Length: 202
Image 1 (cartoon, rainbow, N blue to C red):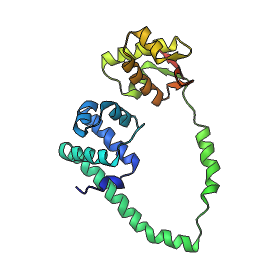
Image 2: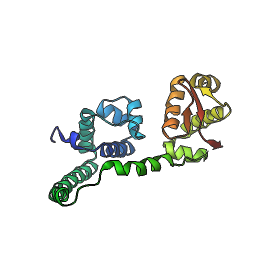
Image 3: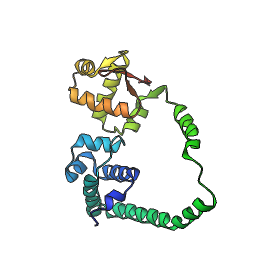
Image 4: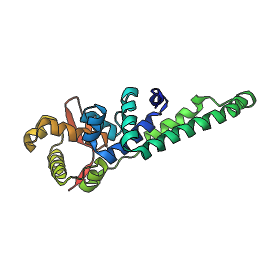
């Protein structure tokens, strides 16, 4: 496999490959296989972080060895993307001569307006949260629902507050809070304080 192939992979493709490998292998086995700690692989799963080129090469090596069908699917997608881009080069050059491309600036207000009007849910069931966070283990669900109940009972909380009231380690609270934050269920009110962004239906 060409050592430079990862640099040509779009960031969204890197995320999709890693997420599919996590679904096939699990977070810890993939973490061990690519030499990255499990917290970082958690971030890959939820799209809050993406693999570097070096890490992505190790991901591709694992995919090629253990899940060749998945590997071949994305390599073929990459080839097709390049083929389409190369075929479009001539038409892009003609367009620049005959019909000037509209300035990017004119599109900006429409993009900003779309971003501003994104609606967030105001309520969520615990089951919807389990599904969105990918929490399926009964033991993990019990931990999460206890943490959510404590958070919902406090208007603004620190992670230490939740750890003390739940009797869970601070590391456990940090892990679940990070997952909830990335999914939009928790928001920061200051550097140390958080609050629930939605009402949880237990």
